[in-house]
Length: 179
Image (cartoon, rainbow, N blue to C red):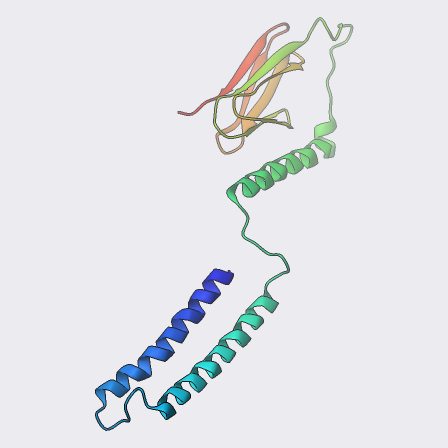
């Protein structure tokens, strides 16, 4: 921001300093460009213009929040991941999503299946399985246990919500790879 304002000031100053001299050089009846009164007048005009520009810069600085900078793409990506996680957490905490079904007289260890998630992209991705977000770094693979039956997964921005069936003792693999 400062560089841009300084560039504007320099352009304005150069324009003020060069403009009158060009006009006076073309006008034969005007005093010579090197005359002392002309130089003093030009310097006074430059000082007035500089003062106006500095006041405008101060006004712009007052309008900006303290320490404000444009976010980097990495910061935007992190914020996007956080938003996805917060939305999923809110959805998970809603009353409609608290309904659980359990299989009677079944040992939990005997009926589990697995879901394997593999990120082959060069960027982190989030995979949402039944409303729970899992963030995978580039090249990361993660295995989670899951009860057999239908489940839903999605990869925000890459794959819409998709329902699949997981059998007891089976492993379902979700691979995120570039096309």
